[in-house]
Length: 431
Ligand SMILES: Cc1ncc(COP(=O)(O)O)c(C=O)c1O
Image 1 (tube, protein in one colour):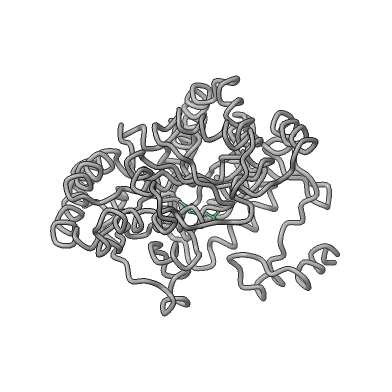
Image 2: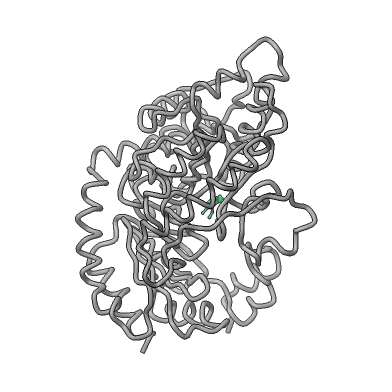
């Protein structure tokens, strides 16, 4: 018997990233509540959220401090437009993000794709404002993902998402990805990073005059299947972009807020991008919020008497006070709980727990960075992701393989016993 809520969702809701007909055979998990790393189904069963609800949840579901901040804000002001108005949470959040990143003048939206749109538009508009309007195209990396609105999809390189909408998109160039799985057998990750950087250098050597920016996901290309790469690539990309007068947009939407072991992934390479896009974990997974931070010289190029020189972009919920309060609570938790150091120790212990999995005969390219673990399954067929997802649910685990890649990207509050459970379930599923 189908859960009545599932029947109603099939009749009323259009689910994302889904062929709705498939849901008849693979009904969605009906969730009633959350508790730390657990989701509680309408059937009363508990499921370990090993993918942080699409990489947004940092400190678990039902986190008291984030909830308290939102409730407190609810008694003050739930929302006010940010055009012509301001409020304490948005100012405080902008100040704190600037102090953390060295970038300023936070521009807000509600989702990751909108942050990508903003960074692309700002970059092209900057070049227009400084008298170089022909610099209005973008380069990105093979297998990169920056969202699915029309502008963001233009710089995304995931065939399945892109092909149906190809006529709507702007041409953009995708350059070799430093994903170390693509290195030659006898090539080190750093040598491969150098080879990919050379391709970037050569491309910009020919096309810098018409290129506004390079957009990339620092250190981990999430949607590519948690593809990881050497920080050297970022260092080189920074230097190459500077040399060719091309902006570097760091899309930290998935990797920001401690996910790769430092607060922001760019820190690992010691670089500061021209634009940084943030979303997902920014509110700990409580409310939709995204943000683009930029360098002061870029901001200054928009500053002047003419309206048309200003950045002409808006969303109704820009800088929503409730979302900003959630984000401030997240930053407080990072400080109060010493999250980065705690995660480092926890990640090391969890990686040890995975030794058997890493050595499993069906596992290839076992990899880990910060609180992300991933591996590729050797003989995965096209049905593997759905089959594995369903079988994991039967074992009370929410996992969503990407192609042949199984990954864990759990809330930081997960403990070793819970991780061990997840690892044991995967070992059983791999046989
Ligand atoms: C790196 C990256 N950029 C952008 C996005 C798009 O964010 P949203 O789904 O909130 O539009 C995602 C989402 O997965 C992402 O991983």
